[in-house]
Length: 291
Image (tube, rainbow, N blue to C red; front, side, top):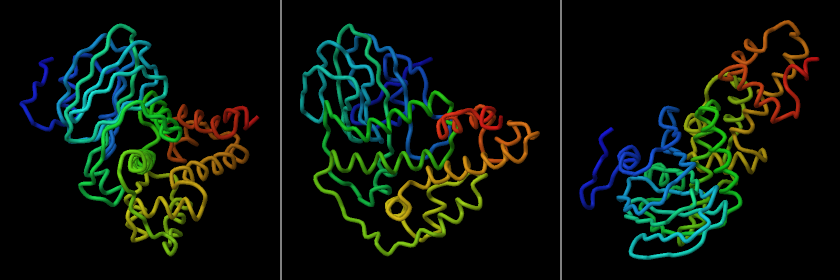
């Protein structure tokens, strides 16, 4: 495959950047239909000395297996030389060139790319000054990154509401960590009951965060914050809980119904997707629960 070679000062897309990176990406989410967020997995990186062009997207690098040697990174005129630890992050804002150099060690990294326009919409900001950072410890962001790794390994089966929620939550974490100030959102009087009702009644179909926000006449950021304040969870987790509750009833009452049919009726991609979700929520498989 011909490598993409960017011209000076040209901001590139994630696809163009991935062509320019001198190593092959093991897996990425471009086929999942996600909007505004993309993930790429690089599980076995060789020694590198690579200048990466500025992108249209913010880039979070999750070092889930850190290099055991020295790592040198340049971004926005600043050079950092350090030794990373497993689970740390690096952040390169959209529009910033960067250059990394490291030797033997075969580290592994998950690249999380967020479109700068989607970030602005999620955080209700515009052209916010966001600084690059390196060797960042962030427990919540690490949990989100690990969830994205799992979703990537499972082929993006959870759907649009999951991706929308990850985009929203990651953007808010990035705003807290890398921006000089955080805008306040007024959510005390937000009515999110219509969103709850749609999830409760129509849990068996794909639902997006944008659809729920429009229904409540809120921004996606306001909806997510208000929903979490009102119901103690995200719309995505509320949807998962509703599906599991219905699955339990079907497993006990429709004892002859095949698991594959139950999975499709509840909006899961297939029987395997149902089994993983059910076991994660209850600690047992659907078959064992039925018995």
